[in-house]
Image (cartoon, rainbow, N blue to C red; front, side, top):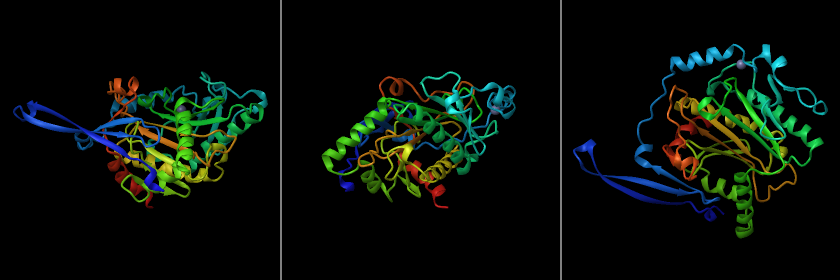
Length: 347
Ligand SMILES: [Zn+2]
């Protein structure tokens, strides 16, 4: 029953005498929204959100950095064999599917931390990641997880994450995902699963099904690709946050051919981002354990967020509110984001 989802929001009014209009008094509305599952807050300055969006200038500096990084790139085909690590012998060598290759991370922050390179292309803008290209890469990631699980079944939490370009914390331009198989969920994933279980105990229904039903056809619903529903998050934790919800599946281990739907939607959302002027982004999956299946109360979901466009001395989108107080300031209304992206999901 959609009625169980509690979309809470309230407003603050800021009053001041503005130098922009002869020191007469102006008022600005700040909207505070609460995530219906986690209770996390975000604040949206509606005035800022409605400012006309500037398209980024493709700076010559950024083009030069991309060009210069080509020489000596470890992920380019002429270096990949010689310069990237191989898996431990029991897991094979490197994993290849189509044009994608998975190999261990040279500087891991987890026991099972690998890299998935999409293709030979040293640089691609966000509108050039086809569903097939993403599918090959994510399928290679799943093969890695399956190989890890055979030897280390405790590594039950599988993550596929993608930092795109430097403002999103990518140190290497050549497009790649980072994948981890972990014995414990990250704190945020743990929170999502715990709140979903509580929701089921309280309401007798699945939060994710309820939120899809509540949002379907509404102003934040972007569209669906097969069994994956795409929403502009009601209370985003970062700019232009898009959530993809995988119907009836609790983990990457159980996704099977629904991966095609996931990659189709992700490709569309990335094209939409590009059209909106986004040039840097983060993506991640929030996957329940590979075992057991917890789809009764939790569905696999993925998020993507935009980051500042690459430019010398760009202004970070993470300040004290985002990094220390965990209450992000959002500049794009989720409803505007959905209306932007919706057209990409109609074809
Ligand atoms: Zn390269």
